[in-house]
Length: 69
Image 1 (cartoon, rainbow, N blue to C red):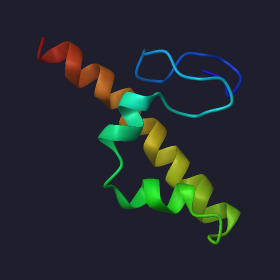
Image 2: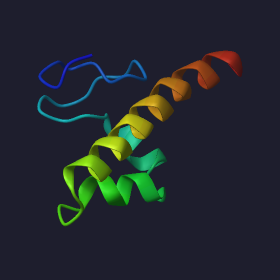
Image 3: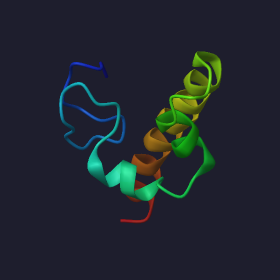
């Protein structure tokens, strides 16, 4: 996965220059990490940590979906 790539960590397609696909953004919109990641008033360390958590959750989304299908 790369920022300039079109593959989301969950396996779906995403827009270039974004971190997550629309499905992941919708799934995590109520999480504190998403609000921290999107809020530019937080420092880079807080936002980086939030992004790492969101990427991990996105990868987990694909595993959970495969397990329950």
